[in-house]
Length: 217
Length: 255
Image: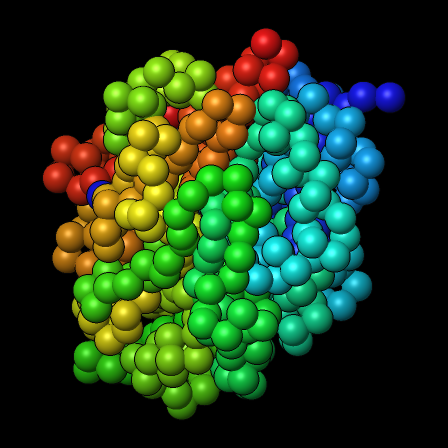
């Protein structure tokens, strides 16, 4: 039996906001930690909770990572939120002491590039609060940002962001803080949002509704 | 640019919203999550639920409130009041609260802030400070129990320690101004904002639109909090934000 939207549970926090936001825009939502359920999803949402290393470790040992990667490679629409945007990339530097020794933790490897910490002497890290999305040319074409105007405010809470070694062509919005970082990306069936649409009021719901429309084709 | 925030505070007792004038003469103003949903639609940047009873019996009610809010609200929210230990805070975060605010328990055991920051991240930990001016001096003392118990602790010192221990924000209430509608204690707000490298939420005393803008411009706060002016419809959130924008303050108006 198929599932419309599966929100991937990796047991690090509360997924109710994401799930309820999706159902409020009309989706049939299942929260699941079962790789088989994830494999049957028409659309996958990977929410953002915890640290890069913890999340990757859980996703791998549970078999969720393999299920996500196979589905995404088969073309299933995927939406990563916050940490869930970061995990599809090659690597993250969330941890300095890990099994790989050099501070880098391997990600899902669906997209190329790394995730690095925001640093500033002047601005506060984590970057918490409502900040603006600046649409790129690619962003103006992105199905997720239909009816989302340039400069829209969305809610962020993060200490890490995509680095400049990612493919510039997939960047849909940029946000300027300690550095200008990619606050969202889109490549084929893969979408990622550094901010929290489920905490971004009406603008966030519009983005989630656009994702649902994309899933339904 | 990161916007300055407007935060309605909902004092909650037995699952219902109340707001005291100087913390007495409580008036019932409705269902907390329903009210918060209205504030979300009106453009509130986040909301704070403050459990003002917080005896052990009604923690279950407050956890239910946090869970209900997680399901219904589309903006971040904080639950504060009545935390005694890390387990209580963990239960609230597990129920879906984006942040927890701790006051008396942290004054009694500052380690609680360090533990909470390690467990949930600094962004999820607010240290609430109730401060009262000492005489006519520019010194403020930390008070507990809604202004009834003096601690002898200097408010600036305590704010610095809270930040050092990993608090992500300070929710600063002037006990002299709370409920007076005379405006924030701007000297207090500015002193704390300059003392710590984390955001300060100004609270206590808002009565006019000018007061909100003053809190940011003169008080140097990152966010302004109010309760009764919103609950009784004296100002809408939009009115406040439009006024702040007219004073050159970056605020979120696309809602």
